[in-house]
Length: 576
Image (tube, rainbow, N blue to C red; front, side):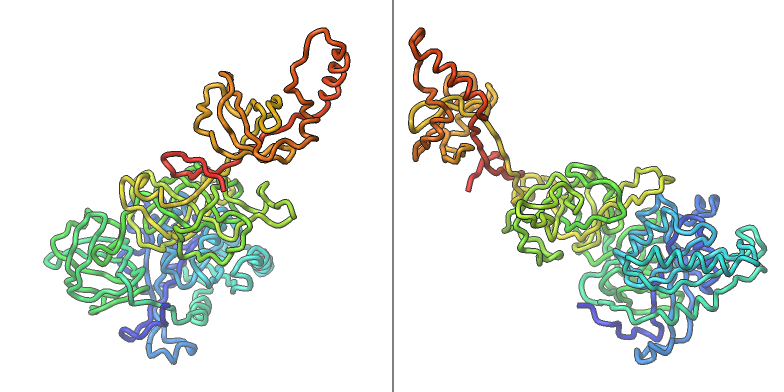
């Protein structure tokens, strides 16, 4: 368990994620709040400058005196690092990458528009990755002065209603004008409400739980060279810690380098830990090879072709989640296409305490055609008990291998949905439990997962053969090799147990032995149809009548049920 941070130096770093819909004014707000701009800050990307939107996770910071509630921590200053997450829909994967290191989320809303598609998606990500939030109603300068207060109050009420059923209900809502007059206005226009926002952020700050143990992992968002020094990689430490002269690996390039020097916001340091913003200098490395990506303790990350994850559907996602469907899977800092297969423990669901952080290969799991929710047709069992499993899992098979840490956050989305359609494109989230590193994982990894399908086939009794056997039909196709089914148990709809003995003739018919014999009433239903009728006998009219009355009786069914393991190459049929 991670402990609260012990001071490394006198400044406590606190990461605030600035999220919101495109054009809600996030970057202007970060600019207004900031005094020190970190290297990656404020849209260095040329494509972003042209369009006036943030394309990468921009970082900037400002430092304030330590607030009262943190006076016992041994720090002297509080540094807010603002992680300005892009709001542009196609860049949602970048937000997911940044959300893992955010201590507080600042959801920026354009007060003239209210909640928009991406603000809703940011809220979903926040609920998965963060516990604290502040809502900032921006662009109040666009409201007519006479109606401004009333409009702000209206929007505040609306936001409170939206957040009512989320973990952020009752969170603070504050209004500002980060860039009065809009992007074209002269810099002399001063922002409104910013000092109040800083006071609110100070009040909301807490001592984040940071864990220096475990392998070092850093998300690099910028890479550049300094003449005579080497190459600097800046980013945020996602886990573990790093010290001068440590070796670090760039797993995407399979390169290991020694840490020559380190800086935190222009101050040299000798070590840094989870949650810190850091610049690492290494030598003889071309910065063009790594614009963004991961740096870690050598050999601590795995590259996987498939994974088992625990899954939870995101309630705002409108569609069903079907097995075999393809999703954009974001994990670690990558987004790849992947195909899913859902499964759970078979009912009755007594094991609802299944750990979401551990996968048990020793158990058997039931294959699902789709993720089960209250609205699925599987809703209730025969006694009215709910058939919704306490925990559901998914097997993800990636179109290309992914490098990521174990137990990392996984999000499945439909990012190909129209950007402008007003729907949430985030479908499910979960935790990576097991990964398949072997390229031939279908032979080495999949057979270890005991997921089965229940198969149910029905045929009919054509006639009684004798008191201990019947001839059946319609259970197999003509070309089926019935020999494979010999010895399997079947049940008649009248209650008798039987065993398939073999085929009968060439047309897919088969013989079933009934070890305890047919019940007299079953023979009656089947009308003793084993008796051969002689033509022209006196019984003709009687047997015709009998035939007629039997036509109303439903045929006797032969039911064959077995299970088959999805990843069993021999496709064995198993009956308990």
